[in-house]
Image 1: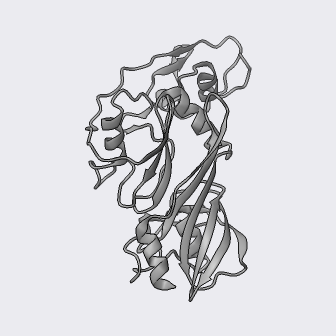
Image 2: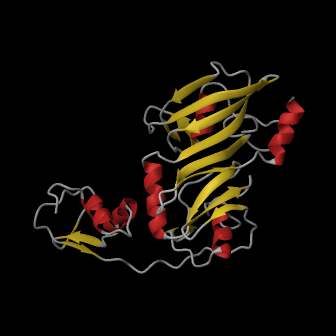
Image 3: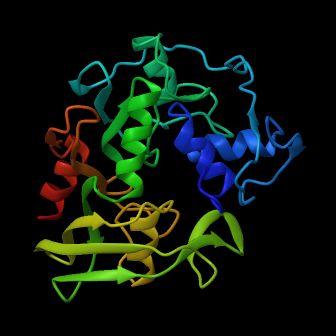
Amino acid sequence: MQTGIRADKYVSENCPDLSRTQAQKLIEDNHITVNGKVIKPSLKLQSGDIVDIEIPAPAPSTLTPEPIPLKIIYEDQDLMVVDKPAGLTVHPAPGHYNHTLANAILAYFPEIDSGETNRPGIVHRLDKDTSGLIIIAKNNAAHMKLAGQFKSRSIKKVYVALVQGHLTPREGIIEAKIGRDPRNRKRMAVTERGREARTEYQVIKYLNNYSLLEIRPKTGRTHQIRVHLAAIGFPIVGDTVYGAKSAYVSRQFLHACKLSFKLPFSGEYREFVSEMPPDLLKALSDIA
């Protein structure tokens, strides 16, 4: 045992089926003890410490399968890449307990063994009204490897967005911490007490008084692209949370158009592309 290693890190490194987050949860629920005593995840282990790990039986799932059509653009034994439509919530949350992508996944692949009980296969998220590509892990080993790629920021994500006004310069980087809005806990905001966030953008073209952008988020904070663009005075068209309604589109003009990553076990580098959906194409046509 490496002296001084954190307990949660030690457990995740020595139990291949447990992520560090899962190890922390087991410690917090008193399922992991050191020398017979309950601990905190941050405890530094010493040589000779005895670590006991109890894996509790999984809680029964409250998630029900729903035969919601899925547009799967890639699938193998370990993962799927799904082209999510706007309007579909990724997983159950207050106010959205059913008719989510998670319900659809469970119906399509009932034997899925990845992620949390009510978030099967969910490695990352897209907002309900953001369309585009999302990765679904089909087993826990693939989930952990993909989560590792997200943590190391080696998975490349590209979005297309439309904002009102001519954004200048034509390319740039937005760096500003993001956290909960202290005045409205349902929103995120740029705040000094938030987490580091970085978004790169490039103008594809100007359309009348609008800018069509290619966005490359380098971190994965909640609502990051929407918050960052609103913070510099260019909220996404149709974003009613951080901007205003639009006459051209009924939801935020944000689409996850490209995902590039290594397949978990072969290491093969793959790139997947999603074409802009009809509602966004129509908005561009109407504006032009």
